[in-house]
Image (tube, rainbow, N blue to C red):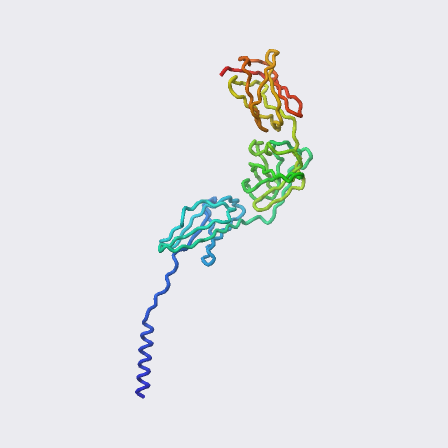
Length: 326
């Protein structure tokens, strides 16, 4: 009996000692991103990223109606930790962005940023006018409007590619400057005001082009192709008169809807005498002219300035020619 009592007493003492013994827990890692949010939204709205500390990822879902090209993040981390490096805006298309968190004890954790652009369910588009006349264009002219279910008014979220049917060459159009809803509930993408910067690129080659329209992550090819054709080169010389300096370059642009093609020669006729003008340099959208030493100074009304372009008709432009020495 005493042996049993002694065994029970010893077992109780051992149990009590084991219960009072405290083992230290592993400290929680202090190298985490606790909050990731996108703040460059209208009306002080915020998008929060989903932080996964198992996979070490941050996933941000961007609704299509924001049409963001970049996100501007604000990041919060564990107490005492910091982000390695500065936090800069990130392109929505970026695929390899990472953030490294450095804890106070020096441990590190690297997160990969995943940006998911949510899209409209579908996208279709068509020319506002698909007539032969509307779809025959010269370089450096504006496209006819494109109508579609864009679902927003941000032109930066759109794009147009011209694809030459014969060569496969792809010509990137400048981003157009207007995307507005119409009375039919669609949106019209157009170069409002026929601004130079939004026209068909001046160096585009003649040919038949398929037209791809991008909206957010959709790409839609318009049913009717675009027919790009050269037209008679035509320098813009105001009929009311031009002022030039004899010892300075004279820069001339093309008339609306035209470009310069293979300029050969130019001359001005003053008092029944021809003065050859030197074409110092040229591009599709500019001629740079220099004058001969014997060009007289003065104002000459009813003057003809003549331009020759290889393969095209000679162009004669009447004007009042005002020449100063300096």
